[in-house]
Image (tube, rainbow, N blue to C red; front, top):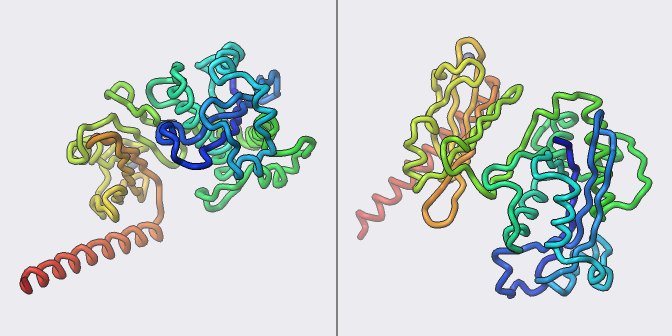
Length: 326
Ligand SMILES: [Zn+2]
């Protein structure tokens, strides 16, 4: 298995009225990639323009951002041919690395749209280098910087222009190399694309990191079935596996995000979050994270809980007053 640093450029509909707009919001028009060997040394490259088949007019935003004209793209090959060459150049088992989380999703969507085999029919592991940069250098790990910021920050030489697929893959690879040299354990922070969520228990993801654990559940027929599942509801300490003493039971602020918090005698404060993801029809799956936390954050969660409970109560009281009036 190699690391393949990938960057895609895409175009979108100018009118939003095409029948394809729902299943293919973005059509890939360029792919650039770099293969990394030992020590994240660049040992191979791939770069191709793709001739559009759906959106044959360049969206103003796309042409402004990436300076590509339709005339140039027409010299490219159709997506199907480019992908055949791409998967000869690398293998579907290689680990994809990208800047941000959208490239893998759009690649999966385009592969499906054009009738090709997706990278995987379950959660696809990849490395989000933008996230790794935040883990390494941002105090607030939720902050997401753009690629040029990271390149400047790490004093990487800017010898080719940005915003073309190959150059962005090249710079992403250079950032990744610098990050790994600083802390090789960053490579453990695998992300998952869930274009195809787990269909059964055996495909579920349990990923443990230094200070948190992530659980991607299988698909459930309804949200009620998901939320009443024992494993989904449980909040064990992710270090020792013992059930936490819950100080705040699961509550929801908007029926999509659920929170809970508790204490492990040995390992301290932990918070749980369930993000419910809706699929076609009623079916759902969820991403649950359990994270180490501290007393300050515990108080914040408690405040959020109390505020939600109060709003609920007010709504209920408001409702009953309405009832009395009618
Ligand atoms: Zn514990």
